[in-house]
Image 1: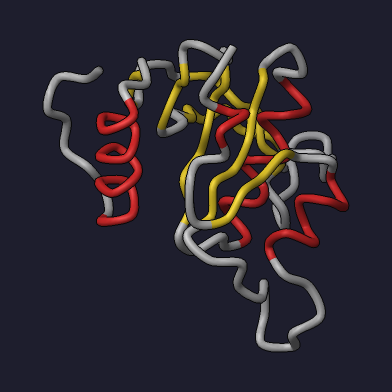
Image 2: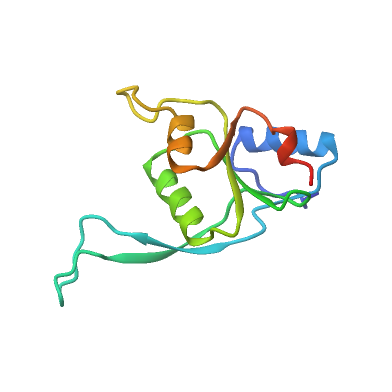
Length: 138
């Protein structure tokens, strides 16, 4: 269980309450990872190279101890969140990682791709609305 952290959303509070009710051992924002992200639209003034990258920190929401699963809970899955999720799975392939969405919304107003479609395309585990039982057991 956790020490009364500041939850970032009602969705995260509900997910925490579900874990507590089920007696699942977890931690909240317990691990931080360095990620290298490409910076689009910039170039190096010295060499004029366009492959500019920056290092940032990423702290996923939940870590489920029994399954060694790192879970990011998302209400809105915007372009920045998608970029971070891709970078995490590419740079930490040994980590068991999944996304838990509040709803399976459309990525854009064009309604061509839902959050689940994006995850399937990138081979990232996901669930919608609630914790899948298989994520919570070893």
